[in-house]
Every structure is written in C-alpha cells, then in structure tokens.
Image 1 (cartoon, helix red, strand yellow):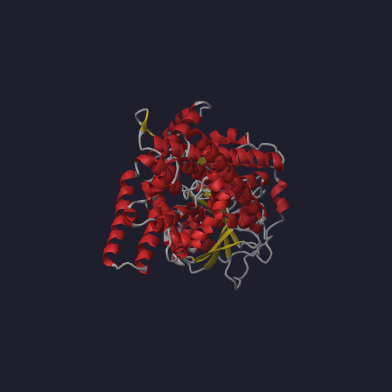
Image 2 (cartoon, helix red, strand yellow; image 1 turned 120 degrees about the vertical axis):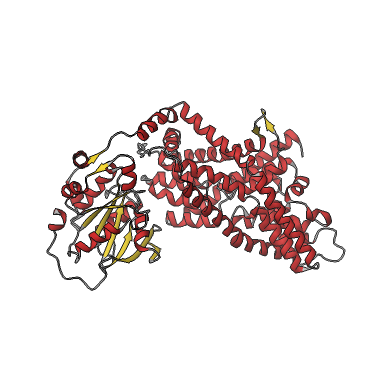
Length: 634
C-alpha cells in the first residue's frame, strides 16, 4: 500500500463530507459504477464556464461513512488534448476555482484491456492523492480467459485493488469495503502537474508492459482469433469499403420494405379515431381542432415511427456487435482527404439520430480546428427528423416497384438522399479546411473490440429510448406547434363571398403567401411555405404542418384522404424533388443552433451555420427545380 503510506499520517475526520472522484478511460464502466453507488441521489449540471456535463451524487458505505462522488469525464491521459480531459485534469489537480482536490480518487479500469488503461493510473499516482483501483468488468475478462492477479497488481501499484462488476447488483460492494478500510481518509494535497511529466510517455509504457507481464495471463482466445479472421475481410482496403456501402444500402432498403405493415396499421388507427370523433361530435371549432389540428398534424408524424425504429435497430446492432469502430477506421482515409480524421466518424454517426448529440460528441476530437469543422458539418448528416419528410414525399411521388427484380425503387431514392447529405458534408468540410487553414493529419488510434452477438436487452432498451424520445416530441413540441398552427390557420375566418378555402384568408395563409414570393423560384407554393416556419423548431414538424394545412385546405370527401395522395395531386414532380433537395440542406432547428452557440462559445458560428445551410438549401432546390422542369416539365 505504498501510495497510501507515503501520505501524511491519518488526521481526524473533517466536518465536511469527503469527495470521491471516479476517473477512467471512456467506456470503462465508470458511469455505470457511479449509478450503482448513488442510485437516485445524484444531480446533473454543467461545469462553470463550459457546457461539459458534471454529475455529482452521494452514497453511504456499509460502515456508515458518507461520501460525495463526482463522475469525471472520460480521459486517456492527464496530458489533456480535449475539453473533457482538461476538466478531468483540473479537478484531480485541484485547479478548478472554488473546488478543492478530491479526498480520494477511484480509478476505474476495464479489466479486459489493462494495457490501454494503466497509463492513466500511473499518471494519477504521481499526483500523490489517496487512490483505489477498481478492476471493472472482471466477469467479462474471466469469460475471455483473462486472469489478473489483483494482489500482485496492488503490490506493484502501491494502492488497494478491488474487483467490480458495475452492471450487476452488488457489484460495487468490494469498493465500499475498501473505502471503509481507508477511513478516516488521510489529508493530502496533490503534487504539481509537473510531476506527471517527470516520467516520459515511453518510460510509462515500459512500466505498463512490465506490470502486465507480472499480473496478467492473457491467452489468445477463440473469440480473438475469430475477430482477426473477420477483420482480414472487413478491414480489407478494397472489400472493406464495399461491405460498408452494401450494409448501408441494405439498411435503407429495409426502412421501406419492413415498415409498410406497421405504418398502415398506425395510419388506419389514426383515421379510425378521426372518424369516431367526427361521428360523435357536431361540426364546430372543437371538432376542427381535434381532427384537422391534432390528428391531421401530430398523426401525420406518428405514422413514420416504424421507419425510424427500423433505422435505429440496424445502427444499434452494428454498434453492439463491434462493427462501428471498424467503419471509423475504414473512413479515416476518406475523411482525411477533406481535412478530418476518423475520430469525427462517431460524432457524425450520432448526428444521424440528431445533430445535438453529434455536436456534443465532437468534444472528444483533440484538434480544435477538426472539432470546429465537425460541429459545422454535423447537421448535414441526415437526422431522423428528416426521415418523415423524405418518406412522405417518396411515397407520394416515387412508384412502389422493384428494380432488377429485388431492389425497392423507393429505398434507392432514400439511399441517394442520405448519400447526398454525406457527400455535402465532406464537400463543406473540404471548404472549411481551406478557409481555416490546413493542419497536419493526426493518426487515428482506436480500440477494436472483439466481435460478439448483439445483446437483445441492449437493443430493446435502445429502441425503447428512441421511441420515447420520438413520442415525447410528438406529444410536446409537435403537438404544441400543431395547435398553434391550427389557430393561425383557422382565424380570422373567410369573408363573405370567399372563393378560396378559409385557411387562405387566415394569419397563416397571409404569412404563407408573403413567403411565396421568396420561395416561388424554387417551386414552393404557399402551403409549403407555411409548413417551413414551424419546421424551424423541429424538422419533422413540417409533415404535421402539411397535414394541418391541407386538411384545412380541402373539403368534403378529400378530408378523409391521407396526406400522400393530396400532395401527389396538388404538387408537381419538380416541386417534390425541390423540397427533397431543400431538406438535404434544411436550415438547422433552433435547439441545434442553441447547442452550437454553447459549444463554440458564441453566436458567430451558430449564425454562420444557419446562413450557409439556408444558402445551400436554396441553391440546391433552385437547381433541382429548374433542371427537372426543363427535363420533365411541370
């Protein structure tokens, strides 16, 4: 226990509750251990001056000793290269203003990959703070045949070493016992940060290898050999990119092929509820609100839930089985050609769900210029909010037929739209590379986990979380905007002798006709212009807005028809193609711009993002509309 014995003699317990810091590499199970310790006794805020999340909680050991616990951002080294690592370094070293150094540091390591984790442990040890090493995921290590001599490791490091399984109930008990054994905690101050650099990186790595040779028995398992054989194919410089492209292509085929039945069921359910309301209520304002406003708007978005869940099912499967890090490796060379590294792959992939987590995930990119460029192009990835718009227009204007006997034409168009977003992001990244100045390409270092079958529970939880997020948006943001839009579309009523539908004379109609002067050159009518405005809050709201607008624009039997045949009869094909082009570059939703403002420290880049995306959207729509008019006519 050398690291602890070198501290000052134990002092009487202080009156304040001691602070324990949880620290470790990303994906080592640190946050799972934090949740296991604290349960519901935790709070989330941001560190002062930055948008990085701060999670703090409290717990009591079996011996009755109370602790506060801080879950620090993941770090590979205290030689900070990213904002997350800077926060971790400053907190451990006691450099945050008004925040003393932690009383004890628990360094959580992945027992299946000590080679990557021990460098950070040795660096923290040089600061001279009381430490405990938590060997997490020991159950997984044992299954892989990895044997770790915890007692010998404790002797070599000079600190207590405990085994934990953070994902299991009771997996934290050994840590709680170790904390009780250290009580009362010694009073100590961290050494200067220069102590970390007292030993070079190469010497640290030699020490890591020496310790591993003494304490770890790591035979090559069948799982590892199988992963190597699969990687010979998956990471092949020619076959690898082809396999990746085919996988993505099949995903988008499935989005249309598998979703038809559940979509028809939801559509029939929404229509049935609408008919019940019509039959039970007299014609009037309230019935109009329920049928044309709420069901016509929110119901038009809800029908696309199956397609979103199918898309995320495949993404979660690829992530859980270990393929996504390989995809980042394959794309590193391509992304390097436009000034990015493979590190940008995960933030950009996250943006397929929503640009907000993608923008926030860019914190892990070391180079500031690369981080900024990744933030600026993240919204060009086709987020799930665009999918309802794409699906609506494709279903209305693209025939449901097979190409070459087995490919869905609608799936091909959707694949092309996603590819257009990726291609555009790479082109914009290349432009920013030239505008901001080229920098030396940094090598990509990734841990490639062994392949394994996806965990069904993880898939189910991931899909349930995605479903809850979508439904919460339908029930809050989208529903609120649909009610507001219904009000603006219903009042004031049509004047005597009106020749147009009442919505034409409403506040929304006046706004739409005013915007039509701007958007007429790209083929948008006043109904589309109305839908674009609430679409700034959330892109999928545009579908609900179209549902409300066209429900109020039609009369008689047309009200019973779904939105697809209505727009198919109301728009020309060039207009539909123009709107698809618009949504490839659609100006960003307000919530994303707000996050960009926080992440970049000002409004400059948020305004730049909104401006360049609007310009690209207008230019792309103009060219699409004019070229399609010339080729196929209106």
